[in-house]
Length: 358
Image (cartoon, rainbow, N blue to C red; front, side, top):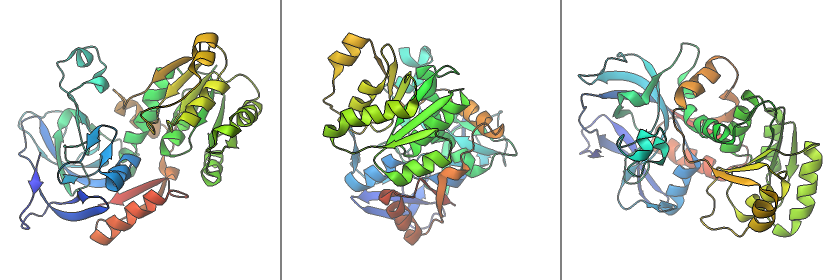
């Protein structure tokens, strides 16, 4: 999947070399296959997982063991076509779906390719990512953008896909009142999607008041500031229920901690549903018996996404979702700017989506 170049290559990429060690270095692209395209990257967003790899060199069971190009939220312009590619043309602007699956396993054949055990995804160790001048990628994972959708919006299709997949899994509709726990990028795109799917009332909870104010300005009906302490749980659940003003049908946990799942389990109505989206902790201590067994609150997971790019593009094209306000910071692609961009993203606060313009 490519290697560090010898200094003579024009293609530059952001290489993760160690903890807090990110360098812009030459990147020799892999050869162009018959069903591949070469894309000139124009917009690449920083995801929380990118920051996590930079800070710890690992995410759950994925470990960075050797130098790796980082990044996976991206869009660009087609510069070269493989010999068998008929669906795209040089000059097309495309959004890129990062995950490459086997296409042969039972999950792929059943249409649930997001669960494929042989997934190779951009920026997922050991596969090189997309924070580079150029990328070689399968053509069927590159989706042409309409004229009124820009390349930054194209890159935002990746985080938006997480929200779309979660709302599909939870069957959000005009009769679903939604609670979202976590007001980061994924919480906000889930909020956007739930509204686009018809949810009449959305309450969002988070520990960060600044992010809650942003969520309110972007369409949340109400917000509740919570604490990280489990001791405050009962009082906060009452505040959340009061803010909703009616039953909470579905809760999205977009953080994935013991406290956030406990909040979801206690706030969601009897017979309701919780969708776990965030992956903050591998293990949790939560009140399963009283909620799941005694009240039949269903827990479902939402892992990555499947067949979401066309809908994401249409939601943006039609104006049903506006992702532009989520892009709060923009940077170029020099060594200094790459370092600063990751520092800004890691600090959080007013930074929601940090975007590179290449």
